[in-house]
Length: 419
Image 1 (cartoon, rainbow, N blue to C red):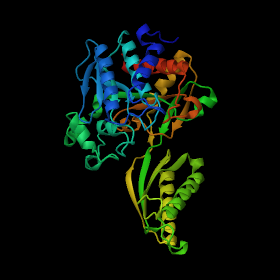
Image 2 (image 1 turned 90 degrees about the vertical axis):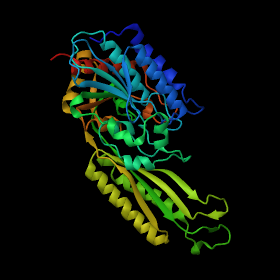
Image 3 (image 1 turned 180 degrees about the vertical axis):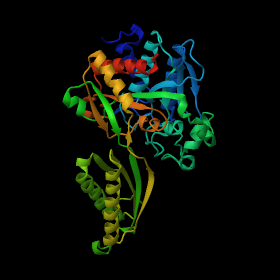
Image 4 (image 1 turned 135 degrees about the horizontal axis):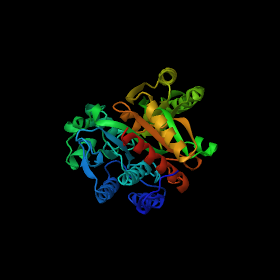
């Protein structure tokens, strides 16, 4: 039997809060709420107010993660916490459900559980900072720091397209980047972590199932490729004498696509996402191109094989066109297998609530993959319309959100109650 929510924390409340959060950064084609931007700070402050209204103890750690904590009466002060949450920052022109769904449903679930007896462990709702890589080119910064995986030296060099550094944005909220390491949580401080998220794919929609239980997460590898040619007059330099960096870059784009196609059956993908040409004038042959590649897969060996084939193809293109190419690995995370006990707990919750579910893998990265390094971790998916995400047309149906909230609530209860 489905858990009955308080009127203030049913699916209508969740939808209302998602709509309110969507106003922070709302634009004509979607929501742009980049990490630590004005819109992100507005959304973060709004969530803090919601947490405080629920009498949660609110703490902001050394990397900017927001943590709202509820401690049932009578529990030991050092009892490990059961944690849920997600992120509020978006990609440019993103959607209203990616991240925000997990934050709001997490808060609603904890609010429901405050009314239930038998809790033996604290509950926490976390808003992870800088989950998206859109601003500083590093993904899941907040959860990496919490999991003790911070790359402080690299993050110190991180800047956005306007030259604003990640370290300066942290300093602006009173969090010196040198102290980021102190955001790491001891392994014995977390009993379990569970995130609710839209699928960002079409498996659940096609199967007409409301709940997906993630088995493995494909972590991203990001490359920055720089192609160097020779700039020249677009009318005066003969075609056969050119060292056109954009021509070579175009060949690399196609090579990445073709290689990725060969790995599709191994659930691996690769995408050229950004190209920048220099000097960028309509009458000048491009003398340099910078391009970024996103590579993902649930099998680490397949990812390694794909990267090597891409590097080999780039080397051949560079030699054939006399355009030297450099490759920088921005970061490379390994795919993560999620905790079987957490998976079975979510499956049990679905059975108890009579909500059909299936297991599936996630080709998108999530904060859960980092939390899995320090605690048993799980990830619940609900369908998103046509698999569209990172897009202003992103949509999740109220019935699916309600199912996700019910399952999240029951699974958190099973993890936090007396055994």
